[in-house]
Length: 63
Length: 472
Image (cartoon, rainbow over all chains, first blue to last red; front, side, top):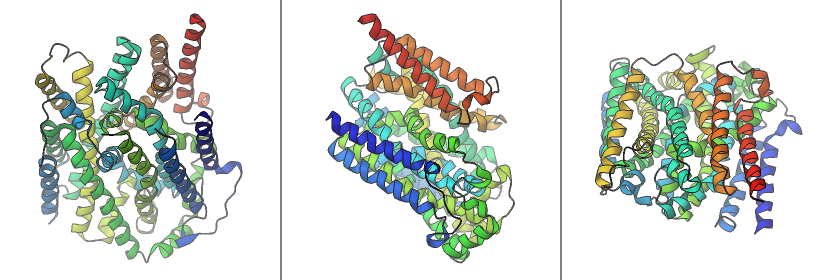
């Protein structure tokens, strides 16, 4: 249980680290889908990843 | 037509909240809807409570000033608060059910046995929620004035909407609030979606409108926001902020009590992790597109960009319809704040200690709600110039309670004296930062709540270690 908990903590921490994109990414000025900024899909992807991990977490770990 | 829409909306809200009203003459029934809310009701009452009219006016205004970067902060930042549903919410739910707690400080008292700590905890919640409550009333008055083209003056509009809110909270308690929030949450989301569709269609579609804005104001598309608003420290601060702040709103804390089963709380948390992804982008798009129709707005004028865009790009009745969504947002936050503060004031400050009669306890709660609403209205009559700053301060002020709460619920407790020191030092430091008594350089570029909450955590940790050392 403790190991599982630690894995989830690490996964959520990893998501948060990825939100700090300025540490390892730089973005171009070119527009993306429908003219939105090119970095927007990255954060939408992170948000979806958060929701999926949280879904698994609340199903399998949160008792 | 505008009046018809407003009247229909008010009637819909008012009677809808009272239809099927359950008996609420016990404190658990009145204040907590008998701890009986299921996933959807729970999720929408949390969502509608949390997404105040700031969602309608503030999101669009900030997006006008900062650009698309604001979306990430509000969508992803808010969703990260789903983790606090687990860290704080699940414990609050469990202990609340076991101990029959109704207010946050009743739980704190049961775990620490400290009356001073529980009173200070309740006081901080009331003091820092009051400006935000008054802001809802102020906002409701402005919107009513704006929709009716000034025919319903600001204070009359504020009074009417507050009175309606008082009546349904008064009669139905949490049950009515949750029912109303469910409808108001759906109304808010659907109307905002319709508004984005209509406005973007008028501007030639998303792609064309985005390309035009990108040509006009390319900085709105920067990841750092216009004028590099989000420095790395600010980005970090704003993304982490909601995790600490949201569970400490008294109206949110008490929502953790009302889930029927843990499973309902878990599913509501999952929805909370997901839904902001979709709904946060809507007002942000309108705010960014605002530069095409109303370039050059400065300061508070930018906060009016959403109603202005609606008026410019749709018919008056559609604009009025969407702005009733903003009224829904105001009322759904106000009702929850009134109920939460009424509950805290009537139960935590000793007024009910004299009464063992359950009906009398509910009566005390209703009187407290009435008094709080009247004080809120009095503040709104001539709102102090600093009220918006006080509203901002309120969020950070409430988050100072997080470290103590975390240590009590998750770390096996903290000595009451250290808990008190943690809260007192945190609040004084926060106020010091806001009023320039503490040099802003001490925040190292972060939002001030970061050093404040770090210090509060440290104090709790020292308290915990010192107790361990004393007992070993």
